[in-house]
Length: 93
Image (tube, rainbow, N blue to C red; front, side):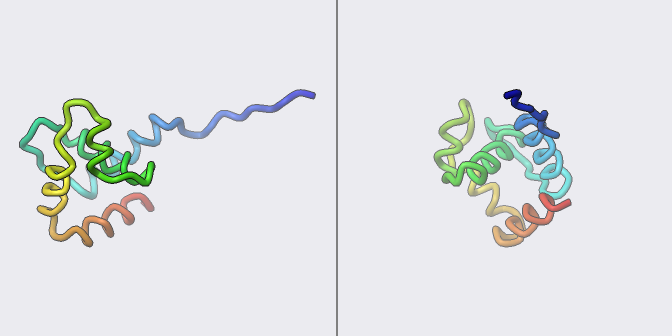
């Protein structure tokens, strides 16, 4: 019996890149620390996709800011609720 394998439309890496570009467009976050904007997005994406905390996702990324610092960046947005809505909106685009 021959098993048919199909290639995914997007790889995990390509999906992550697309999500980061969408975040850059809809949710720009200014950084002034060791973490780059992409690092912050990777932490947010990692926490959301793994159902993990921001703190644990930050620990997994070498040379990144602490979870507390990431939360401070998020708090600087209009409001965390607005950020959450923006993230949901941008992912649906």
